[in-house]
Length: 99
Image 1 (spheres, rainbow, N blue to C red):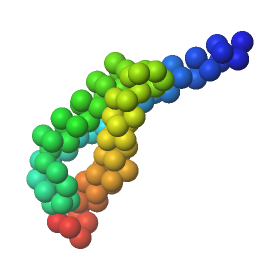
Image 2: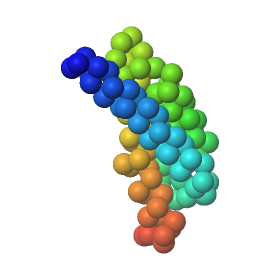
Image 3: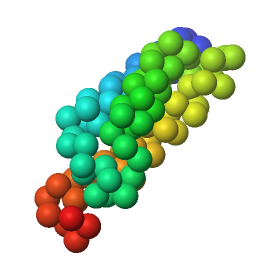
């Protein structure tokens, strides 16, 4: 029973992370290209490539097992976008001091 619960939790983490990656990709897609340079971050195409590839990696590779070597950096890349780039883009587009 405990093994089934652990497998279920890992599946939730696996597919939940893919959804987080998809959110990051869609957010990167919908932002203005000039906002990235105004926020002093990499360009829009680079972040779309990073978040898109990371989402694909998280969807294809499991949290546990040999695919974890791809899943962990992919999750890290998406989290960098969400906690660093996204707030800066929102600040810049709302008329923050960087504009």
